[in-house]
Length: 102
Image (cartoon, rainbow, N blue to C red; front, side, top):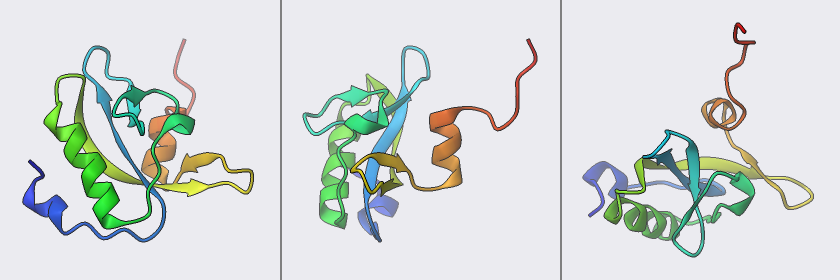
């Protein structure tokens, strides 16, 4: 079941569903076949609220592989690549914005 705040989702461009893998906390992306991938290129990208809610609903129904699923903005590159759509997702994909101590 989708949370009430998610039911009025407004989509203004391409989006994907993302979460964190339960076993190790890795960032994962919902794929078209209903699985999860650590590669953003494998993400199911949709452009309508109904399609985004359907992806999110499927992710939330099976909350044992990944947790905290939500709809995130993505951008499509000129070559068809999928890129993070905002700063939060860039950090989640690329890691910290500063060098970690060794």
